[in-house]
Amino acid sequence: MELKKNPKANVGRNSSLYFAIGLALMLTLAYSAINYKTYDKSDIDIGQLDLEEELEEEIPLTQQIVTPPPPPPPPAAPEVIEIVEDEEEVEETVIESTEVDQETEIVEVEEIEVEAVEEDIEVPFAVIENVPVFPGCEKGSNAAKKKCMSEKITKFVQRKFNTELASDLGLSGRQRINVIFKIDKSGNITGIRSRAPHPALEKEAARVIKQLPKMKPGKQRGKAVTVPYSLPIIFQVQD
Image 1 (tube, rainbow, N blue to C red):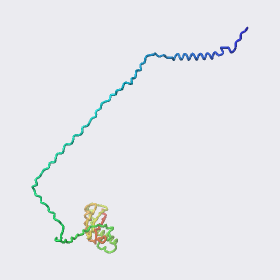
Image 2 (image 1 turned 90 degrees about the vertical axis):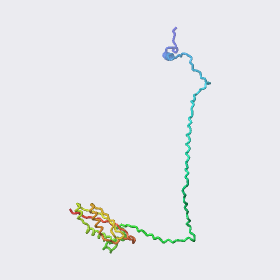
Image 3 (image 1 turned 30 degrees about the vertical axis):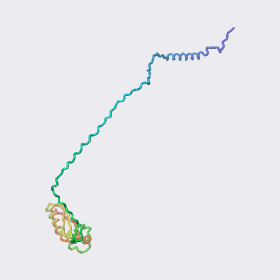
């Protein structure tokens, strides 16, 4: 009689699966055995906490320093009052009353005359209402009198001034002398001032201006006033 195997009873067909499961179990056991640790049991004293004991904290003792008050100021020295014997007799001044009664004689006071002091007012030649009148310039308007006066003074200075003085002083070229003078309320020439390259020329200019004739004074609002006048003297020195 021939025995036949059941194909379902073949154990070898799943041998690889069983091998893999067994290998996995062995590796797991081996890993667990390697990492297994043991500890020695010993008595560990963790101490005992006594809550009844009070913590005593040392508090430092501090002492407050009290600053003593400043000493009182010394008492002021008493003033020494010197008593002076009243030996001198003081004359009492009797103040008489200034009230006037019916029996008092009244003295009449004469009127006091106060003299009015006239101010010396200066009005420039360019704005004067009535210009000073040079002799020979009495006719014409105010502008005509101004022009006539300027021409007369210029001719007078040209005739009187010594131009050769500049050559004697060693000066050459064009020379200019600025002269300022005033025609006062009486028509006289006053306050002569001059400026020149040389003091000798200044003196010569002042000498000539002093010789100007007396004029009729200028007027402002009907009153005679002082009128300042400026005159440049210009000449050429021949080499």
